[in-house]
Amino acid sequence: MNLTQKTRNLNLRASGAVSRYHTWPTLKQQTVADHTWNVLRIYERLFGAPEPYIFQHILYHDAAEVITGDIPFEIKRKNKDFKDAYDEVEKSANEMLGLSRTLLGLAPLDAAKVKFCDLQEMAEFAIIEMEMGNRLARPIFDNIIKAQKALLEKDILVESNKDIALIMRNALYSAEPESAQQNFLITYSVGFDFGFPNTAKDS
Image (tube, rainbow, N blue to C red; front, side):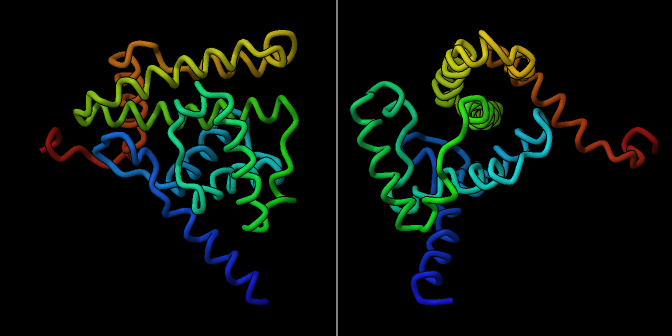
């Protein structure tokens, strides 16, 4: 392994520790590694185990942020000129990290599926923040729901692949955070039911 490879490996390792939401008040600091793991989890739950090229795309989709930092979602969504310029910077960053061949781009349907899971993870993060008392996470949740609904209007999902679109629609959290919180927490609590005796109830 030469020096360039070692440097790239260390930079890729460091990319997992990059903080997200650094311009927004959150109770829990989220890292790129935490986000990436949950995007992979959501993809596997909704669409099954990803093909290797999709797995790699998700694994490294935010790695460039070790160089660029985490750019706020709404800035990229509302400012096309900025988004286009950032895409070029991100492309250069991925080249520096040796990811050019790994992140060649996805087919439209694959890209839509990955993007939905990316947004779904952000919705879940907002729900947990709100449940912990962070009312300032409401705009995060609202903006993500809007983005998910806009994604579902894309031709690739409306005109074809309606089965995939249905999976996505069924996974959407309610537009009302309170309902989403309840839905999420019921699912979350079930995950802790390992069949152990309830000592408080059984004693």
